[in-house]
Length: 251
Image (cartoon, rainbow, N blue to C red; front, side):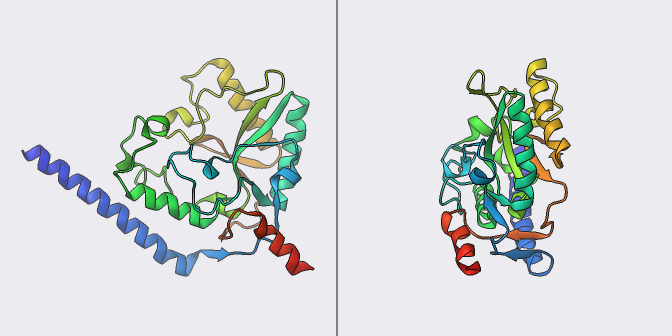
């Protein structure tokens, strides 16, 4: 009985902690974070890097939430023009090695990040647990940083991507799937085959060569080193009108 009471107390405190962090984050936005709905420096990835393959997971229901994510109104990928130029260089080099880029996510509007935060607070919704976090209780995803208060994706120069082998016409086996929460996703994880590890390192090396920095916890995640908006989080939704509106204003 004592252990049951202690466990209940732990989870009550955990939920209160998550709720407090969420409230504190929203309060912080008023003072420290710049939001913008200006898409004038953004371009479509399909136009900037025409060889890339798009599989926009948050437009679909095959993601860790299990629903289409707020703000993903069309299956498009957007990015800043500076990031687009660097990613085109990456694509050109990898094409010469027999690979295409496959993009899972690029610019992510702040409303999508808020959707993730709200989902993390609903501990009853574990529909996608077996696919994306089978070894973790959902209660720990927010406290352990798997779901963050804000995302570099919202600054427009961060990507989630993998390689597509043009010879086999298949996605390269990286030894772990996109958005899997756990140590398996760390780029330097050694519990995979030598070939899988080599493919992770190939992606990492070419991305870094062209000015992108990796993330220690996710083999698929890269951010432009000299990103043009390091302190700005964008809010416009992912749809054709967001960019068309900027063209209309310019005209």
